[in-house]
Image (cartoon, rainbow, N blue to C red; front, side):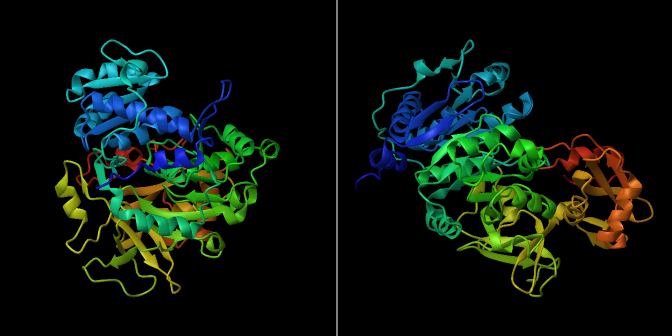
Length: 516
């Protein structure tokens, strides 16, 4: 039987002279590779992995801020038959060592910026045989790129379709979501057709490639034959420069980067032409309606798509551009070839509009297991192939879904169920509020009460101002009973709010500690 030709190799043959990756950093020479050059470079890395003893489905860790070399490794691991595992470079030494060791990785591919990290944790990752450093000098016991990579012939190993991405770890130790993607090709293709991706699109990163969203959609862009522009580290005005310079037409973003962009001064934004943007995928964390309004003021309104999904379950619902303003708060209807079902607290299926229930999904994009944590997978998966990550949702009379919040984040005050995401969205409609995080704090009278952490646009904004505004937007039992002003809200590297850190001081000493 003839071995399947690797997708990058096919693209190199069909459009070898087209730019595949552009790595453009302020103050530095632009680096880029064509599809032909990227194919050969990826072959060299893949052959180096194979020579180092990497076998079928072995794990290979990659770590660093966005770069041409990371994009190459995403292809090289596949070509070597290995499973690439991105590492969040923002993790502590202990956290990094845990992920590397837990993944059973045998090779690490890292930017020189993080050579010291891997030098410090070397004794804690005994399964790793090679730490390969690019972009600068390797330290003692590490390998330089030129000493590691092999020749540029196509590897003989069958390409791997496996992925493993570690979840954010907002509630404890991160877990490796393992997936063989070969079965989801048809479903992914249907999603891309619905959104309308084109071979001539230019994708620009808006967030770290280690996150399943920016990295996953960058991989999709390459499968489509698109040029990928990697921004090494997100900076709002520089991101606009990249869109203008390369006529970027697609991206994926969490709310935080776009909030930073839309909050730039108007005279700064006016310097850059962003009319080329065709597809903005809003995800990673909920975009408030106020943020969507700000986005469509600065970018083509028809470019804004929202998807609901997760590392574990892939893309589950899609909200089209024409529905963004008429369906505030909605995450859309089920994505192509995806079944969505809500379950009530007692286990029955929710069949009434606007009745909340736990959201379960059945699709080929759902993970196969958690690496080394089958019991966690079993708890979130049932025998019929339905899976959940614990989100609570409802649907309206038109079949549009709305995510209330994570089940574990729900506030129960005086017997009433309160969903923080709804309150956060309402608060962020105030012009003086930059960002809000809402969670439960203990109350002897009510069990739990609503607490809000606020980052202000206007330092003159007071608790009384917020209370008046809240009473205009929310039912009385949803109004924050206490408010805390912060200069910054703590987040994971993928821009998910770390409510665990915010609520920790309030729940210390209480027996019932709410999760993150």
